Length: 107
Image (cartoon, rainbow, N blue to C red; front, side, top):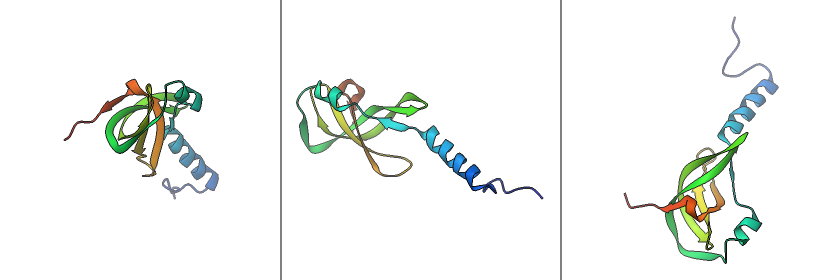
C-alpha cells in the first residue's frame, strides 16, 4: 500500500515541506532606519493614499514584487507602505524608496 503523499508519515518531513513552502514565498525587505533617515523628514498621511509599490522580497535572494497598498507616511525620498500579506492576511509595513511607488487610479 502506498504512503499518504499529502501527509507524510514523519513529522520532520512535513515540517521541512512547510518551511520550504514559506521560504519560497519570501519575506518583505524594508529600508533600514538609517536609509529612511537620509531621505528627509517624515510626514504622516491624514488619510491613507492608495498606491502600487515595488517591495523587495528576500527569497534566498531578493526579488521585486508589485503590491497594492496604501502610503501611510513619507519623507522626501521614501514612503511607508501598508499592504495585506497574501498568505497571512495580516498587514505588512515596509519603507521603500519614493521612486518605487505610484499612485493608484480609481477603477
